Structure formats: C-alpha cells, structure tokens
Length: 393
Image 1 (spheres, rainbow, N blue to C red):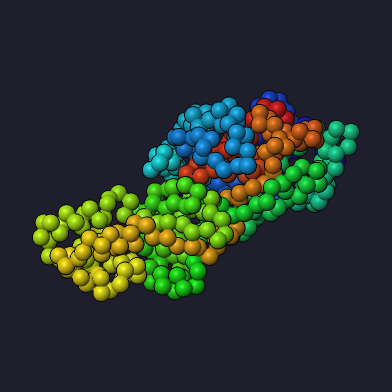
Image 2 (cartoon, rainbow, N blue to C red):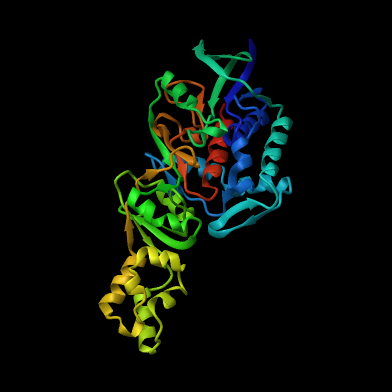
C-alpha cells in the first residue's frame, strides 16, 4: 500500500495542473492514468498547436446548468495567470481570430512545461494504471489498481469526459461520482459536426470540402459568425461546432451565407446601375458556383439581373441569408471536442471544487458540468478549476 497526501486520477490538462499546485504546497502527489502517455489530448488539440487559452474569457463563454459556478475559478486563476506561466518558459505563441492563443511551434511545448513543473514540484506520475476499486475508510481513500494499491487523504477526479474515445475517454469519472452518491447530469457531445437528413445529405454531398463565412443561429437566440465547412456527412467548421453545443434534436438552425452584406440591397443597387449580368455571374463574386446551384433553381440563376423583380431578389436573398435546415443529429463523441453535462456543479464548492457530501473528494476539468466555447475556453476551465483544487487538496 503506497501512502500519499493526494491521488489525482487523470494526467490531462486539469490533472497535471492540480498536481503542480498541490506539489508546490508541499503535498505528496501521485497522478494515475490508464494511458501510456500523459497529456494525449493536449498534444492533439488545436491541430497539434494547442489553443491553450483565450484573450477574452467570460463566464458567458461557458455552458452549465449553474451559470454562476465557473465565475469564482475563472477569476481566481485567469488567462493572464496562465500566460505568465507560458512566459516563464518562453514558449512562443500567437493570437488568431476571436482572441484564440496557439503555440507557434507545437503543443508539445505546453505538455513539456506541465511535466517539468510536475517534476519540480515532486509529483509522481504513474501511467498504464487502471482503477479497479475505490473505497473511503476513516477519512482516507483506498485505491486498488492493476499497478498496486494506494491510500490518500485527498482524491481528485480529473478523468475528462466521453469525447474522442480513441484517445482513451471513459465514463470512469461519472461512475466514481455516482459511487459516492454525487449527482451526474446527462451528457451529450459538444463542439461536434452536425449530420444531415438523408435528402439534404444527398443534395449537398457535392459540396464536401467547401468552406464559407457564415452566421449560424438557433431558435434560442444563440448566434455565431465563423466559417462553415461542408463535409461528406454534413456540416462542420467553427460556426457549426459552436452552435452544436446548444443544438437539440429536432431543432432547426438558420444559416446566413453572406453575413457581412445585405444581398437584396446589393443586387438592387447593381440593377439601378444597369449591370446586365446573370444572377449566377453576379452571385459567383460572393459564393462558390456549385453552392449556388445546390440552393437556387438553375432557371433563376440564369436570369439576367435587369429582368428580376424585387420579389425575386428578396426570395433569393432569403434563401442565401436565411437558409433554415434541420440537422439529423451529431457525429457523436467520436469527433466531439468536449462533453456537455457531467458532475452537477451544485454538488461542488465553486471555490475549491470539493464535494459537499464527501470530504476531500474533488472534481475538476471536463468531468464537471462546465463546457466552454471553441477557442481555448475549455483549456482555461481546466487550468482554473485545477488551480483552485490544488490550493485546497
């Protein structure tokens, strides 16, 4: 039986960050993970460059059944705190659209930094370790694993969600919560491509690979303006990934394929200027021709602008700027970047991430019912929630 102050299950972003903070406080910390490598999701994130935080982080960038829960952690350890750590290691990074921050070189820089910090804090990381059983006896946790048994004063669950099972995602964290009588809210895939109804899929399949700027909105007033990507299964790209976290089965979404202009005004102005081109020629200045052919009748596209009525122009603008489509579903956890739902925030302290019911049991990161938008927000939640737990374990 190996004795330690803190056992953390999960060697991802949250688990490593919590281990660093607890270790810096002089706590003896062991991190256990079933994978053969720490931080696998860190390495694959952001196309291998790790979108590690965002310049603008607000509670409104998060989805949770308790919208206030994330406020404390995000204010106690914010994006500037993480950037200070990055700066100490002189990791070069750059800002992309919407305040997203990426490594210049590789996500390996972030993982290397975390592992170095763990080493400096005296943290032990044990991989290839499966949890067989957990018990709490006399205010201590006893863990039985395939690589020995452990006893700890504090137990931190940083197991992540169900997203990308090929990277080793499992429901372990939820099962541990339920074992200890802690409520787990229903989970679903978030930041995930949407699939189409059979008829729409067949009609739009020729557009696979095409990306266009787009404003996508839902019935609840959620709006995102980013790129839309057509795939052989349906719709993807940042705009669709963002709205997918809010989308529910049976609902429609509305797409504006020309988000930065009023198409009807543009066409009416060109008609006044006596421009004598066909609609297809004019519209090809704005959108790919095969996209136009999918959405508009060929007869209308071949009409000369001068012959178009106001009503025709209005109908055309409506189709391209208010295109309503009802997705069939999502691609599910296989390609989802995050898991929505999880351990109920009302069961935890927003200051320390500790369970209200079970002394010295903590839940951090994606396993908790806090889900960020695309753009570094989920990493920031991992850093923030882990830092808070690290001050308390």
